[in-house]
Image (cartoon, rainbow, N blue to C red; front, side, top):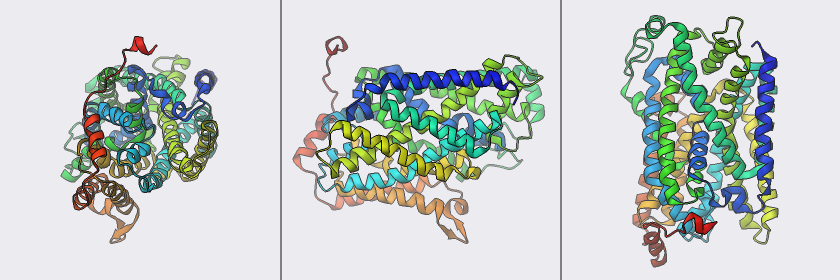
Length: 509
């Protein structure tokens, strides 16, 4: 890629800003600050950091690559995600924030579950930590793969070297600043992501002379959402599987924790509007990148680099459409921002589980300062394992995120939904629901049970669907077969079902 001097300068400025933000928020010294920011996020930071940590490299690399490969028949993923996101913000956000405050001011999802069910056996925290460790490590690995792919494409680096640099940067600022640093940087990165993906396809479209010229370069059926991009019809199972991505939202701790951290219910309402508008622009633009990119930069071997190649051709190549290298560097930083804005959240949530939900239970006398130190060591441990997984880039960003999304969505999505809206759910029902949902995805995606194939490949059905609904069935069956929750738990449920009486913002200050 040409004009590397300008790109290097842009990346240096970007890195410096992110590290500066992390250093500014280094003042976090207690566990609540480090993991939840003291519940002080305003509406804009809450919304944009949630969406940045949600979409990540999937939005700028995975989804455009899928559209590039198979046409708009893969756009059902975007539709399913948008529907799930709306439901998550409108139905889950306020209630979860309210219930975590009611349940002893819980600062992590596992702590909320333990307090919600008054679990003194540590069964919920232990079960949660196990599945967090599995699926968040895979999720973080996806970020490392995306970062390694991006930096190697830009600077011509060896993939492993590029991935090391990505991992070191993400770990560094996450270690330094904690939740507030991650949230503020994710807000900045969310705006960079949106600018890049919203503007660039229209620039490319204009450079090609309009839709007529794009249409002339794509295969028949490429614009048909019921076609597979290769001249055939897309199957009903494929559409259902892609739409089912929306179910995963209810079990994504790195998104749910933003709901918990927003400073008031009024702010949650504002955040909801911001997040939905951001997502609508981002998802539709990602589909447009894949469509226009097919004609603008044809014949790519690695389809997930379509946006990178568009930036190169628009700003950086010898025959650039707009010969402004620094602007090209800015948009490349936007892709990198998308990648790290999820990886940092994965590391922090995994760290919070290992430290706040496991280590603190074993060492009850540990000070907050000591626990913050342990959490930083946990970040390093998760990063090392994710790095090992990411050494093989062949799986691709979309595949790794797909498996992690299904695992988290199946293990925790049904439980979060049911725990917020059904008073009759029991602790044992919650434990069994996590195990059934998580194991179903692992079996479906990784164990060859059908003529030497995994069930996902054999059936064509996304593992989130069986995982989610089997978890729901397990929770309902086990809960109904056990004793009714105690009067105290039921009273807390009623309290959490009503809006909190909160001080006005002026009074808080």
